View 1 (cartoon, helix red, strand yellow):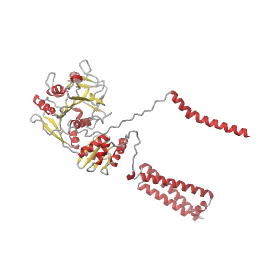
View 2: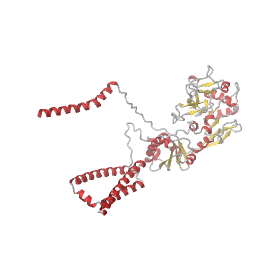
View 3: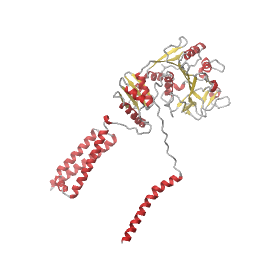
Length: 526
């Protein structure tokens, strides 16, 4: 008797272990979204437990299976197991990499790669790897990027691979690749790299094209007038910009225009915050370079920063006005509503950008411009022949350009009739369709320093400006897809009443009528 009770106890223990193992396996499977080793071990333990129970309770099972209820239950169990088996088999088949396929059922194939992208992928000569740097805070963006990259991989003939890295977990790797913001990607092939700031088809495809067609792009930083240095690693230097440029296949060099003419191999020149005015001869050399189709990015600080007083000549500002029609106002932009609190009202912040390849990925990303002058953009008949402009960055509507610098020093600046006000241009691009010259002018240089490199869109804005100036921003255009606008019509009172009647009144009413009809029919029969 005691031995029989012990067998029952062991049988119950075996079933208990089996149930616990199944629960553990299901929970682990749900959390990790994969059948890993712990899940497999748990299910194996569950099977062993059930087998042990069957061996210990063979008499009980034999008697139970002989009843009518047992036969009916066994048939039901077989049907359930068969159904689950078919579902599991189909799930296994369709989760295999070689059988994965996505169907784009949108009206205009919005989620299908463009023909240009498919052509680029089919012509890949060397393996390409895409590394995405996403923190846990950008998990939604990472999923979107993974969906896009899976399409690239599926159409690359096995030549494109991708992986995701958390820059907070591997900060050294992120620094090695020059990553300065979350949700960034790097496309690499061999020793060549191209950054992608946002995971969209246009940026990814053009990055691959640039890797397949590498060109040497040389950027010269002008020196000799107290400009910010690309070699300066201090908070006020531009070494971070240099590092980023070099990571995307730019050569960064220094140019002293006092003793040298502008070199013919310059893809573009950068004038970053001179504190002394350029001479007439230097500006003439810069003008000749641009007249020949050259490219330049200029960060020109307000006159007090440059040490200029009212009436002092500024040949560079005069050249921009006479040749390009751009007026560097003699002011400092103040914004009492949109600014960086730690920097004060002299650091206007904005998310107002013009339509340009430089700013196309900066939607809703804040940039700020400490000690920045405003720029007047010509319109109508004042526009030079062949020159087109884009106001790249605008201040908030409550900003003004303070011309009384003493009031700024005293801390009591206020707008008056002499000050430009409203949405002021903080940065402008100009392009001459006749000569091919490109020019980007910022009304200050402090937004670009190392100290602000990882804050807002500042560093990305300047990087994109240099890339645009060197015509390295866009190599191919993708076939545009017409976006189908769909909106949910706001329900009127009549619509709401009809919906309420059909969903809340009519069904119970039909049941009530049916019940009354059945009752009446049975009463008549009685």
